Amino acid sequence: MAIFGREILGNTVVDRTGAPMGVLTDMHFDLNTGLISELLVEVEADLDPAVLPFDHVGRTVKIPGTAVARIAEKIHLNT
Image (cartoon, rainbow, N blue to C red; front, top):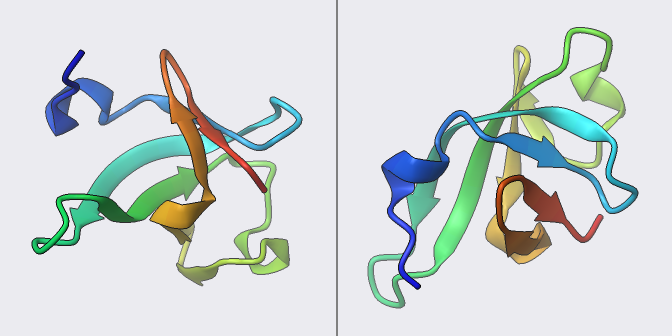
């Protein structure tokens, strides 16, 4: 089943324990492979982006595509 980017924008991103991290606001793709290279996630209000193992600008963290375990109703990370 194909998933289009606009269908998952706004979905909740959860860590490997299922705890919500934030909401997907954008994503980048590798044009050579077609794979997701990076997710941009606006973190939850009670979460400090500086304590996460990802680069961030303001409240938006940049999560590498390799950290994505699966995409379903929620976006599940393997970290």
